[in-house]
Image (cartoon, rainbow, N blue to C red; front, side):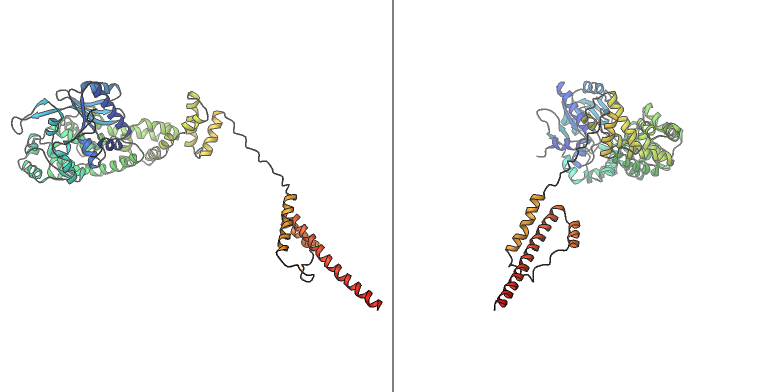
Amino acid sequence: MPDYIYLLESRLSPEQRATLERVQELARAQDLNVYLSGGAIRDLISGQPIRELDFTVEGNPVRIVRELEKGGARVTADDEDLRHYEMIFAGDVDGSIAGARDDVYDRPGAKPTHRFSGIAEDLRRRDFSINAIALSLNAQSRGLLLDPTNGLADLERQELRALSIHAFTNQPVRLMRILRYTARMGSKMESRTQEWFDLAMERGLQRNIAGADAGSELRAVAREDNPAATLKQWEARGFLAAIHPQLQHRKPDYESLHKLIRVRSNFLSAGIRPRLDSAVINSILGRLKPREISACLRGLEFRSAEIGAIAGLESEAQKVAKMLKGRKTSSARDAYFYLASVPAEMLVFIEAEMANPSVNSKIRAYVQKWRPMRLALPFAELDALGVPRGPKFDKIIEQIFDMQLRGRARTPEDRTKALRSLAGIKEEPKKKEEKEKKKRKGSEGAAAAKEPDAKHRGKPAQTAASAPAPATAKSTAKEKGRLSAGAAIGAKAQAKHERAASAASKGAVRGKAKAAGKRSRGK
């Protein structure tokens, strides 16, 4: 049996893991059963990036939500009647918390009545089998996978299967949703689901999609990695009219969408995760008139803050670009701190939509150079030098950052030297290299003297004729220049030895000659 908890924790970001642990703690403290369900488990098993953490609680999750808000979480949308809360958890993690419930329909297509239930009923009421999987986070069953509708098999087959013949009749927005899943996952509809889908389209159920439901799908497509793929699927089947009647004819601005996604990929590779919801929706609706955009968003039941962010995106971008072109951001330091205060979504939008080389060069420098430089500041190295944390420590760090922005103190050696200088720490005195006096005349001379003796013992004695001629003063001086002191001493000893041998040989010859002369005179 796979260890789904280990698999989950290895796939989550540190912020997502912290959120998971916090929700488990709060549920345990309130004696509530909690499960990770829906999209998180689907993405985990299918190998997709885990975009959101959706928690299902058996009971009312409102107290958990309030505790999470104290820790920095934000509720972006809520439905207290359904006990459903869309949230951005601390650490900028998307997700939701909802109470387990069952939906009961008096007849197909009627408005459902809701009753709160356990996790099994909650999973069976869902739209597709791949979304009806949950993972227990409770102490006694932690890691247990719940799959009452066999969604794992559908994930393996890469099929999307609706859980009811009335799935599209009860909620027509599922027609848009299943196309979004096929575009994202590259899956196909299961054969019966395809028949139900085609039947719903023949009956014109797409015209019954409620504005709020279409708005939810528009928000969801804005968070997709490739929104254009989903939009083209919707366009092919006429679903863009559910967003605005004119959008089906004027089309989304696909070129603008491609630019946004390309720039976003550069930010992601640098470790920045921009939220492009407003920018993507602005591109989707960009070919509509401003009044039509406002009317469209109100009809989709967008909140006033969302409408304001989308409508004011271009004017805010102009203000940021003007600041980046001005004197207040002329230095790299000033430009860095200003850009760090601007939302990443705005920077992506400016780089994608505004062809201003000076502005875009600063944004690219911030993403590719200045921000990585800031993240790599030598806090640990300054700690190791013994500088205590405080105003002086912070001042030194800022000074080092300034130096690096100007191209200095970037190598480890230069950085350490600069840190010592700024901290007032003197350089360590260099160890004086002890000059070893080479007093090896005795030892090396003895070794050199022994070497020719050893050679002579292994060879027959040389005659006077074969003995080498004694070295002249000139050759001896030349040898001295080439050899080291020890080798020169050895050479002198060898030359002396050879001269003595030569003299002895000559003496012996002269002695023999004298003796022969005496013998001849005696005769």
